[in-house]
Image (cartoon, rainbow, N blue to C red; front, side, top):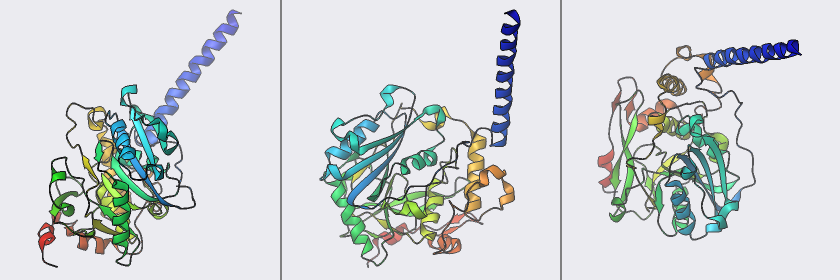
Length: 358
């Protein structure tokens, strides 16, 4: 009996040591735990559901999330044509997004522990897998307030933008603050700055317009991005950008634009954004993985053609072609239209063009 017990103890101990060693090997091999070992999947093919809209929400420990979802349904003109996909990354039950039991069948949830979170691009990837063929795709943050009939306004803006002859349109801008909702006009993506390894964007203010106007610069705002849901087939979200913040928008902008998408400035405000959230948990306070972020920035730079592939660990080169640029337009043409010189790291603003007489 004693021998059996000793053998069992040895087996358990050996298994523990092997697990630790294997885990350390895998973590070292996959960039210090930056990358998930589970293979990622593509968006499934679905029959298109006309007149429906999918709202993508990446939520990190956000107690405002449930209010946002409640507002989405309560302010929609056609709530039963609205579907929400939320990636929850929570520490406590109070941070959950659960609400609106009458719409449970229209709310799809991917739940992760906050410890598993890897930044906005990772969460938006999981949100995209919850899309099931809805005609429009609206990406927002988890702390927003909506206006009445926002869904009708979304369809109006996409339809008006597509009248220019290209159905691949993105209606996008940084959503206004509650105070800015009272002003005439709307935010417009018209400037960038090089205070980080990759450019970040800045918005100007566009005058009142009857329809969405072509954006001054081909920039997308991750906090408010409206476009046909079919974009996911050609420009799927990249799950291999752990902890990337500054760089998310410039990379997505370049990918969409080189795949033939045109950006438009919203002419109608559909929601406001709480930019402060003072005292609330933030991703960057819980996660300090600087090495992961640095490698994600390198991956983004490689996709953008700014540095050679040899600059990074092979694991961060996974599927760069799948999550890469398009062939409808060149990256050189993108930089020119964006007013960005990525070599000299200089930017030319076009905000002054918003008030030019047409």
